[in-house]
Structures are given as structure tokens and as C-alpha cells.
Length: 90
Image (cartoon, rainbow, N blue to C red):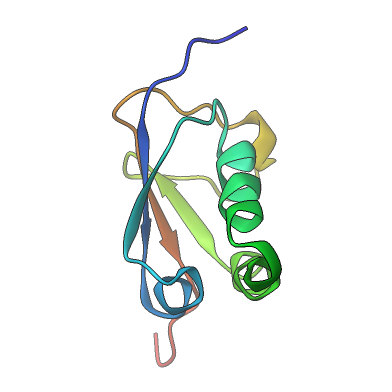
């Protein structure tokens, strides 16, 4: 089992609105676990965040996740995840 530390999820635009915060900490070992945890923590309001996350792209320490399965993307202590919804006009 991987040792985990605190990673940071940073939400932008519609993701920030759906999350209700611009940033939060996670102790998840993978990106998939972090996203699932963020949705679960919001209870009934998590469905809205889940809908937005399905459309988002993710940068993990500046590197695009792309089409990789989020469950296979490791998060280490100090990792920063940028949660980027599609932007209009870009």
C-alpha cells in the first residue's frame, strides 16, 4: 500500500462553483480516489460536482492527465491537481 500525504485539489471556474471552494486538501493515493472523495464529502450536493468533473481536464503537478484512468494517476504529498472545466471561447 502506498503511503499518502496531503495533496491539493484546485478548482477553477464551474468546478469551483460546483465544489463550493477554490481549493481543498486530500489524503487520497490516486486522482480517482481524490475525486470520488470530493464528491462523497458533499453528500447530496456531490451529484452536481460529479457532473462537472466528468467534463473536466486535470493537471497533476503541471502534467496533463489526458485519457489516463484517474485511478492509475498517483498523488504524492505536496501534489497539486488543477481541476479545469472546459472554457468558452478557447
